[in-house]
Length: 377
Image 1 (cartoon, one colour):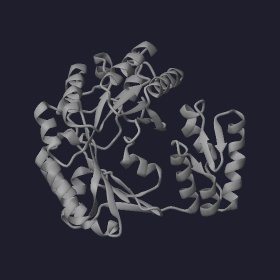
Image 2: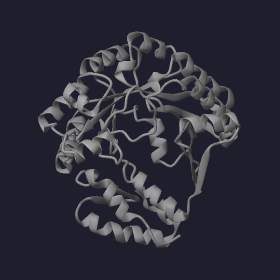
Image 3: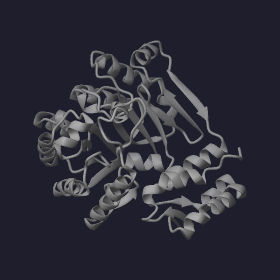
């Protein structure tokens, strides 16, 4: 099974914390859609022996596309790839784009999963992040989307400067009131060259507090688990049967191709990524040239990537896989590096599985980096 990720590099306005590739100039949107369709044609042989299980529209803000543009892209996939009978087709969307008319149109399209970027149900948080919607729009779109879609996920951000634990609990409880089957939640991070970084450096906005973020992550886990959500990946919580198939495939190392500027691809042995310039991307595709770079992954690269992704999930790191695929040296190194974290009750081994404990979840990425192999090739 394989997946197709389609990057829509347009947004109405720039969120202060975002460092993804996008443009707020939508004049080249139709040229971009045509280029995306052509890249799909140029790369169809990469998945000729694979069945496509998921199609994911990410960005940027894919909901800026017209319904006809979305349908044309999906049609190009259907006509050139072996797509399973009932694929998961996700559209990332912002509340301000999801009018009653747009939601109805999407429900009549092949899109069967919405991932809605709410981020917060409080206007003061949304203004700080420079989101294009307000709390009222988030409420209206969720109530309307529930009428047409069963599979809905929302994004929430914690660790926002000035957000108290009490307000964070209100955010979570508001999210739970919609009875949605999936919630993704991320700590606000300060990325270089973003407006948020500049505002913090100038003292306009206080810096992110890691201790507060950890407290709010623990509140999130406690409240969602009480409501029957499974924390199947550090930032993702789903009810049974509603885990994101697209993202789960990433974490399990499945093959996927990324279409569009800045999109990444992976086939198990190498990674590839497209140029992150809209004009150059469109021009290159028009000339039948794929504007991508490739990197062949060494055994150590593949080991490190597996540890990094698997440790974030409920499935954990398979010790048998480490020993069988990477060899005794990697296996013994992993056990040795893990020992101190097991003693600190941040990691635990259960049979074949090495995984993080509740205590270790928030520290997962740091722990994983300490398990990386940096010597063997």
